[in-house]
Image 1 (cartoon, helix red, strand yellow):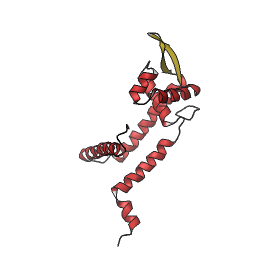
Image 2 (image 1 turned 90 degrees about the vertical axis):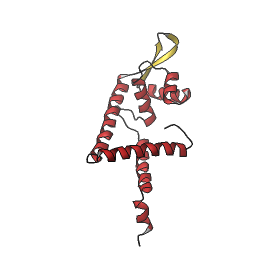
Image 3 (image 1 turned 180 degrees about the vertical axis):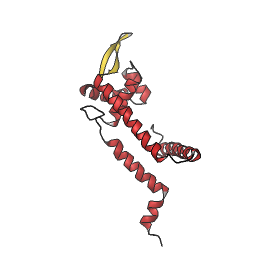
Image 4 (image 1 turned 45 degrees about the vertical axis):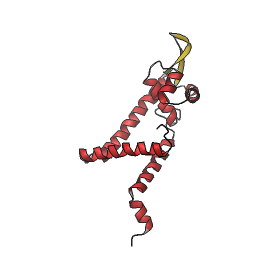
Length: 158
């Protein structure tokens, strides 16, 4: 008879939990992204949002990301201290500050993009010999799982 530990390890849901655990560890790590500063996931994604939405302000960034202005402001302050972001007065609305990246922020952004390309390459290497039907099935499964997990977690944003 198959032992219970082996049975659990062969279940798809158990494998998925192990993968999610590894991704969680991966996600919690800070990285330097080509700079001398350690950046958390939320910080590098704030840098990405500022870069890809030139001239955005705190309120616009909060709306874009679906978080509070306070949350955005806290991360922006940390990024300013790390020399990644600058606030400039909006020439069209002098009471509003626009956000832009410093050269250090630009470096982090470019290295983050390269990092994502490496992740894409890793996934593509694993899926290299999969059929298009298999890839479509996997994509559909992951999309459905994401939606179900969001509902399972109380409907929070991803």
